Length: 193
Picture 1 (tube, rainbow, N blue to C red):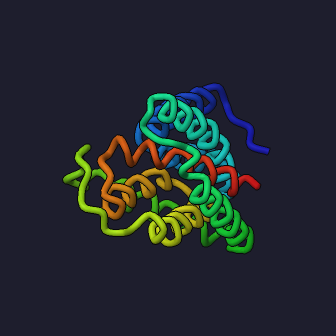
Picture 2: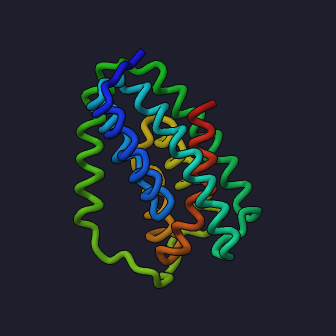
Picture 3: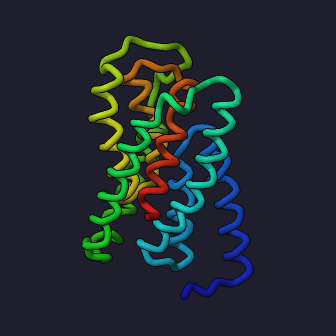
Protein backbone atom coordinates (compact mmCIF):
# COMPACT_ATOMS: atom_id res chain seq x y z
CA UNK A 1 0.00 0.00 0.00
CA UNK A 2 1.38 3.39 -1.00
CA UNK A 3 1.08 6.03 1.72
CA UNK A 4 1.76 9.63 0.72
CA UNK A 5 1.88 12.99 2.43
CA UNK A 6 -0.34 15.95 1.60
CA UNK A 7 2.29 17.51 -0.70
CA UNK A 8 2.59 14.32 -2.72
CA UNK A 9 -1.19 13.95 -2.82
CA UNK A 10 -1.54 17.50 -4.17
CA UNK A 11 1.16 16.77 -6.78
CA UNK A 12 -0.67 13.59 -7.81
CA UNK A 13 -3.98 15.48 -8.09
CA UNK A 14 -2.41 18.26 -10.17
CA UNK A 15 -0.69 15.71 -12.42
CA UNK A 16 -3.98 13.86 -12.86
CA UNK A 17 -5.79 17.06 -13.83
CA UNK A 18 -3.12 18.12 -16.34
CA UNK A 19 -2.84 14.59 -17.76
CA UNK A 20 -6.63 14.36 -18.15
CA UNK A 21 -6.68 17.65 -20.03
CA UNK A 22 -3.82 16.57 -22.31
CA UNK A 23 -5.48 13.20 -22.93
CA UNK A 24 -8.74 14.90 -23.91
CA UNK A 25 -7.00 17.28 -26.30
CA UNK A 26 -4.35 15.15 -27.98
CA UNK A 27 -3.45 12.08 -25.92
CA UNK A 28 -0.27 11.34 -24.04
CA UNK A 29 -1.38 12.15 -20.49
CA UNK A 30 0.39 9.01 -19.29
CA UNK A 31 3.64 10.77 -20.05
CA UNK A 32 2.80 12.93 -17.03
CA UNK A 33 0.99 10.56 -14.67
CA UNK A 34 3.34 7.57 -14.87
CA UNK A 35 6.53 9.47 -13.94
CA UNK A 36 4.73 11.31 -11.14
CA UNK A 37 3.34 8.04 -9.77
CA UNK A 38 6.81 6.48 -9.94
CA UNK A 39 8.29 9.50 -8.13
CA UNK A 40 5.59 9.15 -5.47
CA UNK A 41 6.83 5.62 -4.79
CA UNK A 42 4.39 3.44 -6.72
CA UNK A 43 5.81 0.29 -8.24
CA UNK A 44 5.80 0.27 -12.07
CA UNK A 45 2.84 -2.09 -12.51
CA UNK A 46 0.72 -0.07 -10.05
CA UNK A 47 1.70 3.17 -11.81
CA UNK A 48 0.72 1.73 -15.19
CA UNK A 49 -2.59 0.36 -13.88
CA UNK A 50 -3.45 3.66 -12.20
CA UNK A 51 -2.68 5.46 -15.45
CA UNK A 52 -5.12 3.15 -17.26
CA UNK A 53 -7.97 4.13 -14.95
CA UNK A 54 -7.31 7.84 -15.50
CA UNK A 55 -6.96 7.27 -19.23
CA UNK A 56 -10.15 5.23 -19.44
CA UNK A 57 -12.33 8.05 -18.14
CA UNK A 58 -10.51 10.74 -20.13
CA UNK A 59 -10.77 8.78 -23.39
CA UNK A 60 -14.46 8.00 -22.82
CA UNK A 61 -15.32 11.64 -22.21
CA UNK A 62 -13.28 12.82 -25.20
CA UNK A 63 -14.70 10.12 -27.53
CA UNK A 64 -18.22 11.19 -26.64
CA UNK A 65 -17.42 14.89 -27.10
CA UNK A 66 -15.78 14.37 -30.51
CA UNK A 67 -18.71 12.21 -31.65
CA UNK A 68 -21.26 14.78 -30.49
CA UNK A 69 -19.27 17.45 -32.34
CA UNK A 70 -19.57 15.44 -35.55
CA UNK A 71 -15.82 14.78 -35.89
CA UNK A 72 -16.10 10.98 -35.83
CA UNK A 73 -18.73 8.25 -36.18
CA UNK A 74 -17.99 5.87 -33.34
CA UNK A 75 -19.97 3.01 -34.96
CA UNK A 76 -17.57 3.07 -37.90
CA UNK A 77 -14.73 2.31 -35.49
CA UNK A 78 -16.32 -0.64 -33.69
CA UNK A 79 -14.15 -3.25 -35.45
CA UNK A 80 -10.94 -1.31 -34.83
CA UNK A 81 -11.94 -0.77 -31.20
CA UNK A 82 -12.40 -4.51 -30.74
CA UNK A 83 -8.95 -5.14 -32.25
CA UNK A 84 -7.42 -2.52 -29.90
CA UNK A 85 -9.20 -4.12 -26.92
CA UNK A 86 -7.92 -7.64 -27.66
CA UNK A 87 -4.38 -6.47 -28.52
CA UNK A 88 -4.24 -4.50 -25.27
CA UNK A 89 -5.25 -7.56 -23.24
CA UNK A 90 -2.38 -9.46 -24.86
CA UNK A 91 0.04 -6.63 -24.06
CA UNK A 92 -1.18 -6.50 -20.44
CA UNK A 93 -0.71 -10.25 -20.08
CA UNK A 94 2.87 -9.83 -21.24
CA UNK A 95 3.55 -7.18 -18.59
CA UNK A 96 2.53 -9.65 -15.87
CA UNK A 97 5.39 -11.99 -16.79
CA UNK A 98 8.11 -9.37 -17.27
CA UNK A 99 10.40 -8.79 -14.27
CA UNK A 100 9.59 -5.58 -12.35
CA UNK A 101 13.29 -4.64 -12.40
CA UNK A 102 13.27 -4.73 -16.20
CA UNK A 103 10.21 -2.45 -16.26
CA UNK A 104 11.89 -0.04 -13.82
CA UNK A 105 14.90 0.20 -16.15
CA UNK A 106 13.10 0.51 -19.48
CA UNK A 107 10.21 2.81 -18.47
CA UNK A 108 12.23 5.99 -17.73
CA UNK A 109 14.23 5.59 -20.96
CA UNK A 110 11.01 5.09 -22.91
CA UNK A 111 9.32 8.12 -21.33
CA UNK A 112 12.29 10.38 -22.04
CA UNK A 113 12.48 9.10 -25.64
CA UNK A 114 8.78 9.72 -26.25
CA UNK A 115 8.95 13.21 -24.71
CA UNK A 116 11.94 14.12 -26.89
CA UNK A 117 10.21 12.79 -30.01
CA UNK A 118 7.15 14.95 -29.44
CA UNK A 119 9.23 17.97 -28.46
CA UNK A 120 11.08 17.91 -31.78
CA UNK A 121 8.34 16.56 -34.11
CA UNK A 122 7.59 19.07 -36.84
CA UNK A 123 4.98 19.25 -39.56
CA UNK A 124 1.82 18.14 -37.76
CA UNK A 125 -1.06 20.17 -39.13
CA UNK A 126 -4.79 19.94 -39.53
CA UNK A 127 -4.74 19.38 -43.29
CA UNK A 128 -5.60 15.91 -44.56
CA UNK A 129 -2.70 14.24 -46.37
CA UNK A 130 -2.21 11.41 -48.78
CA UNK A 131 -3.31 8.11 -47.26
CA UNK A 132 -0.48 5.55 -47.10
CA UNK A 133 -2.56 2.66 -45.73
CA UNK A 134 -6.13 1.72 -46.51
CA UNK A 135 -8.61 1.44 -43.61
CA UNK A 136 -8.46 -2.37 -43.41
CA UNK A 137 -4.66 -2.49 -43.51
CA UNK A 138 -4.49 0.27 -40.91
CA UNK A 139 -6.93 -1.61 -38.64
CA UNK A 140 -4.97 -4.85 -38.96
CA UNK A 141 -1.49 -3.36 -38.46
CA UNK A 142 -1.34 -0.05 -36.60
CA UNK A 143 -4.34 -0.58 -34.33
CA UNK A 144 -3.06 -3.85 -32.81
CA UNK A 145 0.48 -2.45 -32.51
CA UNK A 146 -0.71 0.62 -30.62
CA UNK A 147 -3.20 -1.46 -28.61
CA UNK A 148 -0.57 -4.00 -27.55
CA UNK A 149 1.79 -1.19 -26.56
CA UNK A 150 -1.02 0.42 -24.55
CA UNK A 151 -1.57 -2.82 -22.65
CA UNK A 152 2.14 -3.51 -22.20
CA UNK A 153 3.30 -0.06 -21.04
CA UNK A 154 0.92 2.62 -22.25
CA UNK A 155 2.37 6.11 -21.76
CA UNK A 156 1.94 8.02 -25.01
CA UNK A 157 -0.33 5.39 -26.62
CA UNK A 158 -2.98 7.98 -27.46
CA UNK A 159 -0.33 10.05 -29.18
CA UNK A 160 0.92 6.99 -31.07
CA UNK A 161 -2.60 6.31 -32.34
CA UNK A 162 -2.87 9.96 -33.40
CA UNK A 163 0.50 9.93 -35.16
CA UNK A 164 -0.45 6.75 -37.00
CA UNK A 165 -3.69 8.36 -38.19
CA UNK A 166 -1.81 11.46 -39.34
CA UNK A 167 1.17 9.79 -40.99
CA UNK A 168 -0.44 6.63 -42.40
CA UNK A 169 -4.20 7.23 -42.68
CA UNK A 170 -3.71 10.78 -44.00
CA UNK A 171 -5.87 12.54 -41.39
CA UNK A 172 -5.37 16.08 -40.15
CA UNK A 173 -4.72 16.53 -36.41
CA UNK A 174 -8.35 17.17 -35.39
CA UNK A 175 -9.74 14.21 -37.35
CA UNK A 176 -6.87 11.99 -36.16
CA UNK A 177 -7.40 12.96 -32.53
CA UNK A 178 -11.14 12.36 -32.80
CA UNK A 179 -10.54 8.90 -34.28
CA UNK A 180 -7.96 8.09 -31.61
CA UNK A 181 -10.25 8.42 -28.60
CA UNK A 182 -12.46 5.33 -29.02
CA UNK A 183 -9.42 3.18 -29.81
CA UNK A 184 -7.59 4.52 -26.75
CA UNK A 185 -10.69 3.89 -24.65
CA UNK A 186 -10.82 0.29 -25.91
CA UNK A 187 -7.14 -0.35 -25.30
CA UNK A 188 -7.31 1.18 -21.81
CA UNK A 189 -10.28 -1.07 -21.01
CA UNK A 190 -8.45 -4.12 -22.39
CA UNK A 191 -5.39 -3.37 -20.27
CA UNK A 192 -7.53 -3.07 -17.16
CA UNK A 193 -9.24 -6.38 -17.89
